[in-house]
Image (cartoon, rainbow, N blue to C red; front, side, top):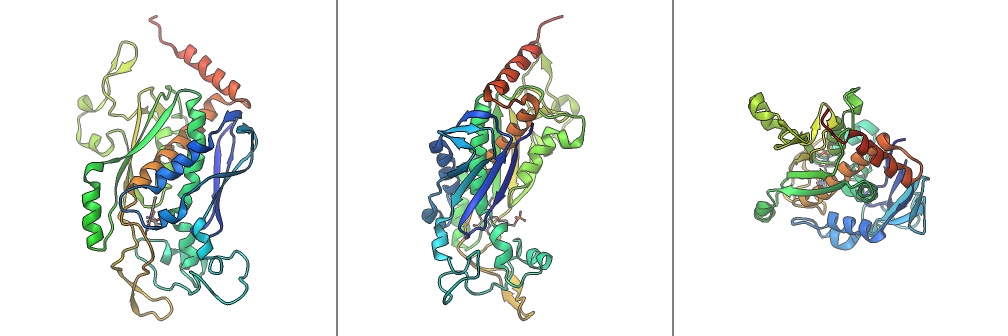
Length: 357
Ligand SMILES: Cc1cc2nc3c(=O)[nH]c(=O)nc-3n(C[C@H](O)[C@H](O)[C@H](O)COP(=O)(O)O)c2cc1C
């Protein structure tokens, strides 16, 4: 039994879609809680005015009845409200009538740092828009909705996941300065998970390792260029005597430099992971590029864009970590009905309850 997420959707297309398979039947979902996470993803200092247009809300097309999962594929939809300005430009079918609204002219000036150049070369495209629409982080909205579902499942076994920005206090100053210079910034986010039992993930194969899986989940988010588990890079400069978390009676640790994972397996301590985001590639003072239509030097595409999205990344990272932990928990505890899943977790905790021999 495993949990799987598949998403589809372009940034200015009609909607974003997610299909989640592998949920147990009987999980109660709260629409407000999902919409609350969607709302959190849209907040943050340095976001573009698009966030005011969107006000994301989730719809469910399948897999849910009267608020409870059916154990069948769950289909989530987040409509793109901005699509109304792009109905000709982003029409899935050949558009009818005269070109109108946004996205009617091909984009030929790829932005350094974005998907634009690699995308047109790889897929044989003439219009950079055909690459950037999917590469854009807009579809993280529906991944956040799936993350909210994962959090609801994890809560049933006492696991809570929370994300935040590292150095939030300085963020508004950095954003203001960058915006004045018509530049962009990145930043660092952290996700923490409490209540994770020892034993999620495995050292059996590299694909089972929980640290590798969390790193892949975070690296799977646009603009994330570095991930660390626990003290991560700082461990490299420490001695073993300073780095490892000594085991004390009760099988607890007084430090948590490992970030709750040893040998690819959760060890019962809080899981702590961090992700570094690069500065966003769309600059209001554009970088140098080449016009693909003429081969001449040109300025890169300028389109409505965030100065910073690190607060949004914190919410997206929280969702990604929650989904991955929920997947590891489904693999360990299984069950077609929610009660089976919870009972397996309870029985496991009883089995590992430590007593002196
Ligand atoms: C939540 C979020 C919002 C983002 N918003 C923007 C944006 O407004 N403008 C932009 O140029 N890049 C934005 N990005 C980053 C790009 O999507 C990303 O840099 C691009 O897809 C290229 O992928 P890469 O950075 O992983 O190489 C955002 C990323 C995230 C996670």
